[in-house]
Image (cartoon, helix red, strand yellow):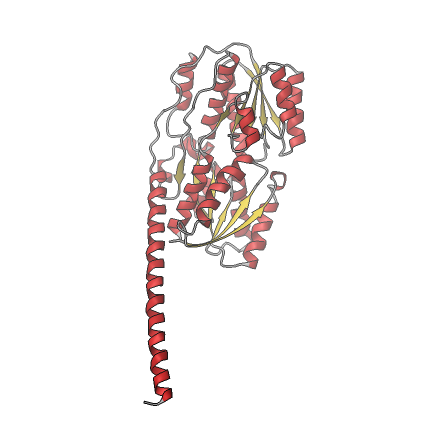
Length: 378
């Protein structure tokens, strides 16, 4: 046999072995990817069908009368802060309290000034709506020194500094990290594990940076959870919410037309979806968001970029914050409020009530009646 024929046979055998080996690797990869998608689907489907029942407190101290509370919003331009601020005023009024909203305007200095104004005006309690108490620690200390109780909404102990404050400044929250992971599961399921995602992150907001964003990013960069995921991150600030996320998205999609998911919270996602359509850049892009405010739900219903959101009952959380303030004013400790969450897409929008559609998901149960009952208020 000639040298050339021998060499050809050896090369053929090696090529066959390589093909078989690569085929095995490809099959293993496919099996891993299929298993990852199945696991993601299971988690997402459970979150789409999660029933809700009251699991909050069953008793409360009698509300003190004639109290005056300051509700300090991170920024009234975003519904995620505006909505609980309005709901906290509603709850306070049921207790016969006078409540005033201070607009933090997405600016730490403005938020700190609002706390100081509340202290100087001798308010009886302060509720911070997605305002990081660490960043406004000077005002918090003044309030606590003046014996004014402070409660936060959506500022759990994700940082060591926050942990140090938690004993004095309790927080009302759902599991923000879980919501981020569940959105990631939904994205993996609906794209069969083939994801090229743009995540629009607002690192100034603690529960976005350490909760929503951290949960989704961790899920999508985990090669066991999503073997074929690509993630691009663009950061913006809440002060530029009206313009920057949309501009960042348009630029990213023009650079990489293969992007198939865009991710952001409430008004950000709604604004981005609307802008993509206006620019004719929506293509096959799907939008994933949080909060499930009325605008987001309508986009999902109409099939306008956004396809999914994960809801927390922000009004419920605000009432829970007022309940916590009442406990603190009575010298009692905060209690676990057990706030639920749920995924919504086109498949289960018909389970929302008219109030949910108009004002955002209310939690699937009449939380207002439950609080009025334990407060002894009609």
